[in-house]
Image (cartoon, rainbow, N blue to C red):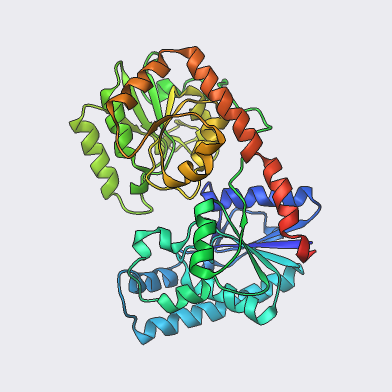
Length: 413
């Protein structure tokens, strides 16, 4: 088949872009052809269609978003602008399908989290008008985010996030989402967890990244704790600071990514908290990019995969995650991890036997003691990381996709 992925963005290292690429790789292995529709794209021009108005940060969509979230009533002009934007985007979807002679489209999270309401409405109307086969890949539902609780578009959320259509099959990434989409929308769904290509050996320390510690000011004997996430409140990074403040030795807490998506207030709070608690906090986002290169100052820029091999411990104290891609990366690089038992971890991941220093919402004395014991015992670390790696290969490797996807799209063939 000729399959078209549709979203606001297919670029960079956000979870939706990464997981869509993994699906595309498996579909290609199966003999299908893959194409891309989005508002921002780093996919090859010959197989993609980039429509700037489809990007969630396009000025028109930003104007709409500023008037529908946090309000319980919307102005008629807002309704008109949503309708106009949706009509235009729908026309572009018609062009996309015609241009590449598509048999199936895969809406990637755009019928799930309403960061671009007109695009969700456009896709819903397009599918209702054409009856075209579609297999939606849902990552984060709007009811999982406080920021969407008060809104002026309940009618559109009910219409399109996600819609109920006979030609649309649904997939979710965790069991809780599967239960909620059935409860709230009366829809059945396939459970397709996030995956990782574990069969490829993890890269290690090489000539390029060997100096990473020195480049960010860490000594060889410093305890390097890595927080491999963006700086947003749901990541619970304050717990990583608390843990670092209570561990012995020369502890350095390194955060790999910046803030920005949800403002800088949380980042500022973390910096002040680290200062108050005497934690050496390093935010190194300016030294980490999507590829290796030199910046404008002639300094090396590393990838996240250059960073993992140097870390002694990974912290993952998230309050909520749709799944947890950074956790899979931690298993892949065979690193010990301290984790806050967020709901998806408790329901989907932990029961499979994965091991971690676990906390329940706050850092206890035992959390600190268990971390100290683990770091002092290389054999204990080796046992944890090897077990986690083997379980991850079994449950979250590409074989999982190769098993699930053919069945899920069989009725479309």
